[in-house]
Amino acid sequence: MSPERLGVSVCLLVFLARASAAAPARPAPALPPPPGAIVNVSTESQLRAAVLSLSSNTTIMLAPGTYHLRDALYVNGTFTNIGVRGATDNSDDVVLAGLGMTDASVPFGIWVGGNVHGITIANLTIRDVFYHPIILNAGTQAPFIHNVHLINAGQQFLKSNPDSSGGGVNDGMVQYSVIEYETTSRDDYTNGVDVHTGRNWIVRHNLFRNIRAPQGQLAGPAILMWNGSSDTLVEGNTFVNCQREIALGLIERTPNDHTGGIVRNNFVYRSPTIAGDAAIGIFDSPNTQVLHNTILASATYPSLIEYRFAHTTGVVIANNLLDGIILARNGATGTVTGNVTAASAALFVNASTGDLRLKATAAVAIDKVPFVAACPLDWEGDPRPQGSAADAGADEYRFGTVPSQPQNLRIVS
Image 1: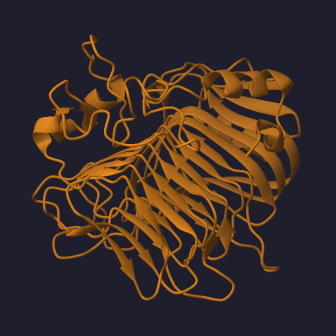
Image 2: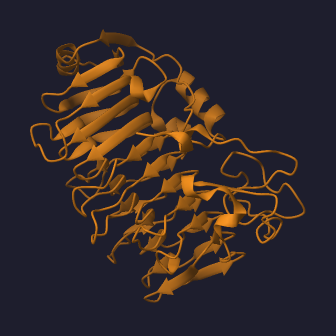
């Protein structure tokens, strides 16, 4: 998706172009100052009043502090280029707090609907709500979610709903954010990002942690793009101790559940104690590419990349590094090439934290696969190849460098 589709200011477009090569969720690149009017708030009552009186080309700017929500914040009307942003670049400085995953008094954090074209939600934390910290409803287009920290959602963390005419929210972007449970979800009905009937979404450089259900249950995928969605880009994300990580499509339907899209340069780590399923599922999604992902699932499930159903044709699965197999199911067809299935924790800088960058001794992966034009950069934004050939997986090892620990993998809630 081109940045122009976001329908936001020129200065934000320049920022997006500059920031696209960076990868870890933390530190998040700073946004430029918002265009248009700014309404500064410092209390929950001021925030609620600002939302009720919101107009186009206006950003609500929240001072640092904890805002104890009495209800959801309903952004409902006809607006263009609006924003709800924390005043600093630290998402944990501003906290919108509900009453917990089992208290329906605060059903949502930020509810968006009506006719909203171009909303920015950035630089803040939303936690402990009954349903969804962020919900995007019919009439919303081009949402931009940047540097948010979403903690403990009763259902999906970010839910994007379809409309009644076969469409949905298009041209969304979720980046440099942390989405996590402190322990587990309340039941199996959860996802990190769940988009119905959405076109041209980008989900990149986020950390998903503990998107998993209580013992004996199986949570939904941390990223789920389905119900007629298309052309999704999922890149540069890190998943730690989730049960299912990425699904483009979920069920068999006519027309397809998902179409096109690329899944590239993602890190997936699961502890051996996490019961899971396929890490990347391409289900009823033709012409989808799965390129240069690293998956260390610690024997929690045998087939870590699956493509499924007869309409799933033209799939390319190339140059991935994993500790399991790649499986075609229910008549799916595609090209599977250059994948290395001999991954182990010994190959990586710090596997248990999700840092799946290669060590110099990772001979099984380094310089082993051909260059793929659709994946020219790695998880860190380094160009491929660095040696005589590209490396399998999401990281392209740079000889002579000593990797430092990315800040996003040091976050402790």
